[in-house]
Image (tube, rainbow, N blue to C red; front, side, top):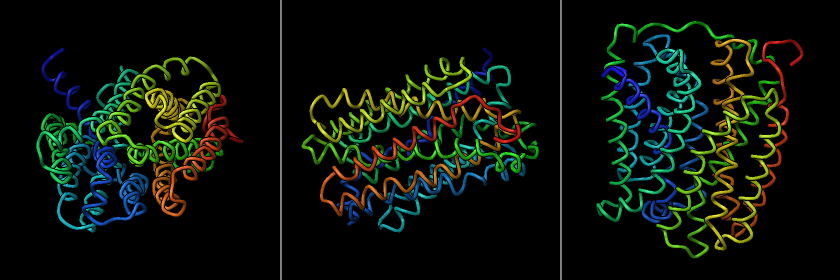
Length: 390
């Protein structure tokens, strides 16, 4: 591999690693943030909600930016904006906390939609491999930050504000590695049109979008509140963070293995159902016996949620009839899906505040997973987006 190729791959992987830490880094520190800033549980949940809303609302900006300045420069700009957002939210006051979080999430939204195009542009003969690397890097980024933020706080003595600002470092390093691509001769090349009309008119699109939204909702609920649930169950903060990290690490393995297996079959329904059942079992373990074998519940939950995430991305990639429709479907599914997902952490916070415990929120979560399985059943059946009556 040439030096140029090595820098390209390293920049791509590090960029992907930055797509979740700004969000995942909030959860282990949430109790401290709420206490310091003076937020209620609902207000604490709103931090993640604001970020996930931005993932949905601002995703459609990506095709506009790509056509104007090119995919490579769009990705570079996103990395700089992530760095600015995580530094800004560590400044004083709740408004700045929410604004900085929203700014970082807006950049992540643009990068989410841009990454499939980056794969096609730079790795045309290795699309499957690099898509797997991309998904695994996204999950690994969330897992590593969940595990490291509390130890970093203890080692550095910075507090949650300083630790949040440290998340700018990997974003700036990725930007440095990606700079040669953004300054290259092909960086400003414009993208082509996207067949949104065909995609929006298909029922299959909305099955896939529902599956995307609901599996994201169940994921972000746990990302936002799992450490707090375990803290209130009596575990120390570092162990609660490790549990969240474990479930995210397990998702890395699931996201690598499941697409390879499920992609060989015309129907992904058995995998969708299996992943959903495992997610249900994980939720039940946290609900009924959170401190009894908590590591087991995290492994089961991680396999279920990691498989669900990988399956929806696989379905998005294989259902459309042509590559242009893949990009259009991805934009619709991510934009609408993340808006649906954003409701989860906020509603969980309200339910926790109203009921005084986690039984009601987790029971509602089980109902959401059941609907997720139903949507995935329709999304996972053999079909081709673009054919009539879909």
